[in-house]
Image (cartoon, rainbow, N blue to C red; front, side):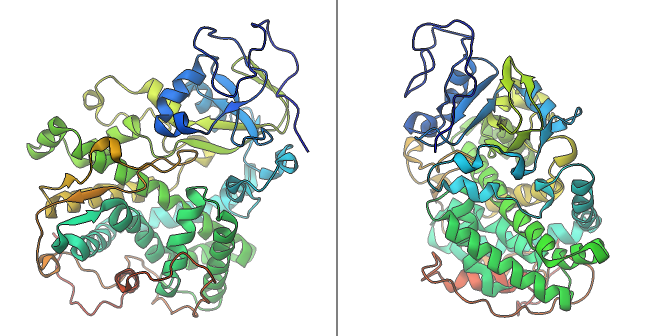
Length: 490
């Protein structure tokens, strides 16, 4: 099955305009294209911001396709004001409900991005009052967690130090794979109450899903199995974790499917935080002036991380918006059920100040979304990134990039953009764990003691085969089974 063009009539354009396998040349600004343009390929992957700038020459809203067949397409919003209007949705024209998408059944093949667009029970798949009901317990749980900010910071600090201690003595590491990718996952697993027996499946599955990898179907099934087992166990024996908190907050309306889906969604969002951290590390390691400013306390790593949301936004594109009705947007006629893709990276690049440090604290970018569906875990994400960066450069102050910057490998940027690998070298630090501060015995949650969940069955062919025991021992540390006596935090 194939789809029709986004619309049949356009303004007068040069013959053949819009029917390109590559982007049209820059010589026809404002000319709308009649078929979707590719949102894939080497040019897009090499420099997404430059690619968005070329798309923008054809208007603030353009049709793009994410598969070669052209059956998976949507309207890309490249203008920050229009993107903010869609996110805030004041007139109710836009829906987050995947069942509204009129072209889903027409998508040829099994594109891995589809697994992130399945109809689910989490808050981001619902609108209006139902969205508000499902979002409320999540917001309340994170707000209550923020009331325990000191314990949360100590918890994150301990995890960061423990991870760094695992490779500090070697003099080299892959910061993406060994640190930035794992720290947010460890934090979220600890807060959700996901047992260490699930660690390998969670790590491999989240990576495959958010990178829109070829085995996304299997990864999605593994994630479903893990979260269902954990939520089912906690519905019978609540513990000291966010899943138990959500079960309690939803009361009689709670069911395992809903909370399982909420937990699934929260775990997947940790990957954006990982990319944010890696992007910031790379920025610091490749900018001598910036590093000197940090050393001289002219800026903090928090300032640098905030700048990173302008310069190298981790969340590139948001695909979960569809039109509730026929509507005009940026000069394009959007039909009911059409997908709208919010190019957050492109929007941020058009609104960032020339000197980001002249506007410290300025948050006009759309990294956290806007409106009713804005990210409810902004404070936690900032804690993870700021503390993770502070501990990394505290313990490894002479850290340097291990490969030329033009040899850094980047993951495909369709949803999240960050290095696939970030090799670094540094002076080895021996016995770092003996001097590390803030070793909490359990996560900073506040209900009752967390019961152990049942053993998960390892999925055949899981990407976790052969992983180091260091990862499992770290998750054991999250769940409060560290034999180390806690030391006072700073």
